[in-house]
Length: 268
Image (cartoon, rainbow, N blue to C red; front, side, top):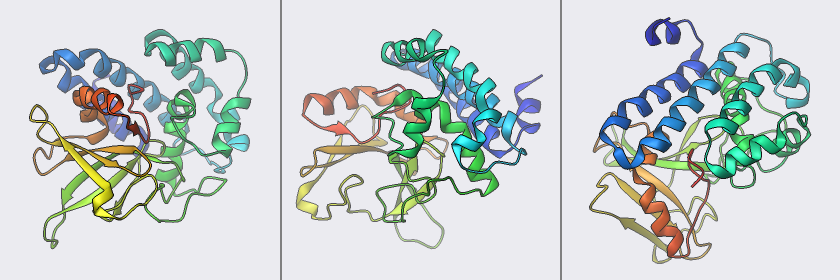
C-alpha cells in the first residue's frame, strides 16, 4: 500500500500522525546532524498511527481503564519499537516494562500526564488521546481549564510552541501544542507557559543565527522554557517535528540552567 492510499484509508488521528512521519522523512536527507532523531520520530509516529487507526471508529469511553482492552495489542507494537529503536532512556524503560502490565500507564493517565515524568507513557498514549480528540470524547479525568498553561482538552502540558499569522489579525499569534492529544491553543504573547508569569522583565527570549525560525521562550522565575517555531518563516513546518532540527539549542539551554517544560519526541 502506498503512503498516499494508506493515509486516505485512515481516520483523522492516524492521518495526522502519518503526516508527521512524512515530514520527518522529508527533513532527514538535508539534516545530517538530526537524521537519527528524525528517523526515530518517523518510526514512532507510524507505530502510533497504527494504534490510532485500530481504534478510530471504535466506541471509546475516554476512561483509560475502560478502554485499555481495545488498545493493548497495538500498545505492544509501540513498546517494541521504543525498546528496539528509542534513545537509551526510552529504550531501557520500554524493555524494563515489557510484559509487566499497564498499571503504570493508568497511574500516569490519572496524574499530570507529563512526558517529563514518564516519556514512554506519553508516547504510548499519544494516539489514544488523539483518537479521543478526533471523536470529541473528553478524557477522564477531565482536562484543564483553558488558562494557557495546560491543554484545554486533555490537561497535558505543552511541549512546543509556534507563531502563526491568522487572517484578520495584525502580527503573528502565539500557540502552544500538546504532546499528548496533539491539540493546539492560543495564548498570550507575554506569558510563561509553565508558571504563567507575565512580567516581561522576567521573560527571556533566546535566538540562534543557525536556526532563524526558532526561539526559546524562557522564564527567569521558574527557569523553564518552551521552544517556539515561527511558521511565518516556513509555513511547511510541523513544529513538533521541525523541533528536532535544533536540539543543539535545548542542550545549550540545559547548560544555562533552564529546563524544558516538556521533552521533545527525542526525549530532550
